[in-house]
Every structure is written in structure tokens, then in C-alpha cells.
Length: 419
Image (tube, rainbow, N blue to C red):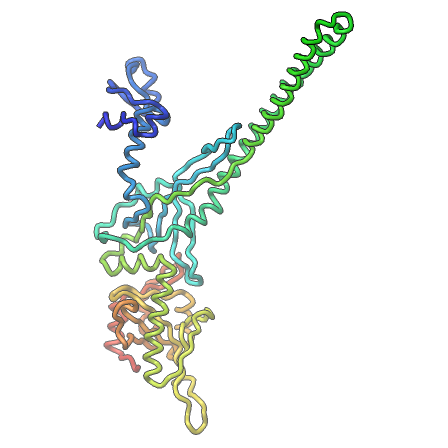
């Protein structure tokens, strides 16, 4: 193994040299390294050949896992979320114009699912070590659906990375001003010295023509000094700029509450975090509901985009003689929920409030497995506030109500669907 760490193929070996063939003692603690009894120890850290070689080889072995995902449990969470781990950098230039890394950090971005009033998830930068406190899920599936980290990366670039870039740039400009002031003072002193020498040689040149060559060399020295001064200033100008470096996605942790268990719930939690998947499920469930309502001869209109607390307005056939409808009997305001079979149903505060206000004209239609093999007949509950209030579990912090699937199925069995 140590021979592999000394291989010339490693980039760190070419830059830092080979690690020693053997070490009597190694430590990461500077305090231990400075003790007299550890005078034969090697302090490991960035820049140390052994440290760099192990780091490079470890990254090679873990390369296949880069950008992967795994399932974790959070005992304090009430809703699922994601933790995206990124490596961010801030880049700049040295005085020669070569690119160099000014700042690097591993950053975690928490992605919470879309809120009740929007399909857009919420992002927040959190300490990267937060993952150390989360155990792996005991029923983690063999594989997880593809997770797109791009929205989280865009958020990171526009917020945290921009702040670090601004800080680096402010710090470099402060140091640059110090260097510029020193360079100007040093140049003026050398310039005065060269000019004084030239003036003295010119004064002697009238009586001693042989000093003309020395005077010409002194003038050339002044020209070279001025050119060097311009080049040095141009080099310092390169130090003034700090720019966004690459943002590399390391991995994503899908985190579910400790109370959630079972394949169906896990799958639902994963889907809950994906706005695109969430919208596909909603549309598929609405299609099932509309097909059912039309089979009964009712007219349907999608109204979910209006944010009025339900998804579909369904109108029964008008009276053939008067053309009027009974607003209590021939109108259904339908809230549609598509879920994996057995997954709890989630109503937002707005939906629950409308269910209370609209009473018998408000219906909850549940479609199991809308993207798979959905039942053509949804589960239909009239006046869900009346029949499911006992089973609804309010989650105040997230502004929604969870209703177990078993409670909905029990109401359908006991009360009927009337659909």
C-alpha cells in the first residue's frame, strides 16, 4: 500500500515528492508534535507528501460514488428533505496570470419540499457536518431515483459562494493596496536615485566626455526601472479579481422523518421532494378524476392554478327544462390527491379550511398509484372535514394536515362514495 502511495503516477508525488518509505510516528495534532518525546514524529496535514498521497488515492477509490444518493433518518424532522453536499471554490490569479484557488470549502445545502402555495422548493445553507448526526435508514432501497442537484447548485452559486467570493476579493484588494503603496514608495526612492545619478553624470560629462557611456547606462537603468514598475503594477492588478470557481456536487442525502418507514412511505417521501415528479403525479391523478366525472356525464374544469383550495370544479347536468343547477347537489369542488397505495394524504391549511367552509360540496378524491396502474374509480369522501377531522394530524410548523390512508378507506367503507 505504501509503495502505491509513492507512485510517480500520482499528481501529488510530482508536485510534493514521495512520502517516506516508513514513519516511526505520525500525528495530526500540532500540540503533540511539539512535545519533546515526539521529536521523531511527522506532522500530517495539507502539503505533507503522505497526507496528499492518501487524499489523492482515497478520492480515486471513491470516484465511483461521486454524485450518488443515500437515505438517512432525522428523528427531529416532520417532513422529508434533502442534503446536497458540494465542494465550492473561489478562483483568482497570481501576478503572472496563472489561475490559483483562493478559497475552498465543503458546503451542505438543505432542500425542503415545495410549500403548500408553490411548486418551488426552499433552499438553505447548513453546516456540512450535520450529516454526521443522521443515521442511515434501516430500510434503505437498493437504489434511489435520479436526483438533480442543479437547482441547489444554482442557489449556492448565487448566495453563499458569491458571499465568499466578495470576502476574498475584499481581502485581496486590502492586501493589494498595501503592496501597491509599498511598491510606489520603493519605486519613487529608486527613481530618485537613478535620476540623481543621471544628473550628476550629465554635469560631469561636459568636463569628462568619457562618462557619457555611464550616463547612457544610467538612463537605460531608469527606463528598465519604469518598465519593471509598469509590469509589477499590472501583476498587482491581476490580484484584485476573485471569481466563482467550480461547484462540484459530491453527494445527496435523502432524509426522512424517523416516524416514516416502509417502502411505500419512503418512495412517497422521495417523490415529495421532486417538484417535477410531484406535478406529474398531480396531473395523472387529475386525469383519472376527470375521466370518472365525465363518465357520469358531469363537466369538469381544472382550477388548481387559482389557489382556491381545490383542484377541479365538477358540474352535474343542468335541468333540461330550466337550464339551472342545484348548487348544493350538482356542484362538486374536488381536491385531488395522488399517492402510493397506503401513503398518508396531506392537505394544506388552505385546503382544510375550504373543506370546513364548503361542507358537503367539498370532496376529497384519492387516486392510488396514479403513475403506475391507477384504479379508474377514485376513493371519494364527501365533506372530508366532517368525516376525517378525528384522524387529521395537524403539523403546524409545515402548515398542513396528515390523514392516514386507513382512515380514508374506513370512511369510504362506512359512509359510501355516492359517486
